[in-house]
Image (cartoon, rainbow, N blue to C red; front, top):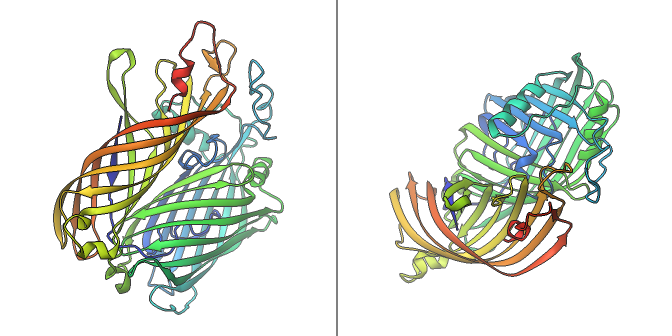
Length: 492
């Protein structure tokens, strides 16, 4: 059984645009879709990668962005500050050999680290908006990029200490700090609405491009396209982008990271209020990254969006699993889940039942607790489609508490691997299991609707999952003689 806590279900509205504008350090692209802001902060880490690939805690393993906008739309000055921690624990990207006593032996002999920081300033070109939803933005940028020991090791290991993870003892490639000027360009163009599946759900497409060039000859760039759904104060999107990394880098570590980042990335994300959550993965290398952002002093939504009543909510939550080691029950937070909840326009004026019924689509990922074996990790990802039936059909501004029941069908994958691959470990190797799942639950949602159209709130749901038709995808897992609960770790 698990409980899910969702913050800011936000949004009885949605229309279209992007977040995650350009993934190039030192460019002042706001992270929040559909609205700009005066200040924004982003924490990027491969641990937020949506389980689109393995989280290796490596390469551009952590980054922090700060952005500032000074002035009005169309002529604003923008400032971007980025700090990135670069590591190469396995520079040649050799896969682990799980048939060997130590699968990682010889793969980290040349491990190095280096930090980079970028500070850029630019000004928006005065371009006109096109229609109620669409419009371009182009921002030329100049800046400085710093490379060397910028306290990344201390920051990373302090974070590991707080999270209970082991410190990462990787030497710096060099300690001195070097500086390179750069020029860049950040541009987005929202085109929409392009299609409608409901009377008031406009879809659109955003094109994004950006890049920087340093005086050393290093180029970093991106071209992306995103299909978006956005509204008064929230958004959801899927898309793809091509990352370009060429020329002389600031270091050998940066060169290895550039090789790892270069290629085609698929991405998805949601925004609810000021929070933005986005995940992406490289199609070729299975590299992942994710971002959590907050935007302060957001622009008010355009009138057309604020008046929309699409009947869609964006919800972001965290599962809390119940486990009972040694007969004692305890609860453990794990991962994230994203949910879209949609009520068709015709239902909102129909009978008493349909006014309280809605469709749901949810994607969840994270770590599932493994009983008894302390050096095992079980990562899961799951998609679920279903429906919710609320106790009441609220409408209009105010504070509302709404009990509901939910049910759905899903597809879940668990990847089990050993955390400690030393010869004396309790378990070694990895396995993968898949299963169809049936979900049933009940909860309560508290919503605050300041004006017609947009709502904010939180919900709590107790959810029971029943797996069936489980199958083993791969099995290279073995335990130390005398440990017989390996099957328990693999069960979904």
